[in-house]
Length: 177
View: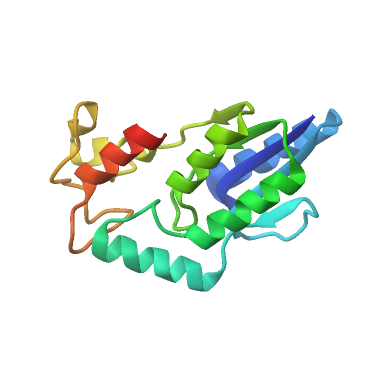
């Protein structure tokens, strides 16, 4: 069985170490595991896929800071990831943190729907179901239960200085994910 982990980081932080440990455990039971990540601190794994390049990251950060477009940029990086997924042909896709300036969730989820294989998403934070924030409790906001708008956490990660697109992001996530 082939399992592909997708995460924002590898070999660092809680989620990076989580997938690294899970990868090691599964491989000890003779599963074929692969890790696709955007921020790679250790290059000790031949089955490691680097998802993004630095230019792509800075464009994604810029679009997030100005347009609150986090998770909806990085189109070319996401298409390259999809090519790698097709090469690997995993039996299971295991998603982790998709926030981190490296992936376009609309493109990824459109692909996953067509791919039609089991997909698991471990939620490490609130970003997948809010219009903007990773931790809604930091700003004591429960708008995500019905409809995000006027996000009080807009200036926190993933920081947006100008436009608040939390309402649009919330609708897109509900529609596409």
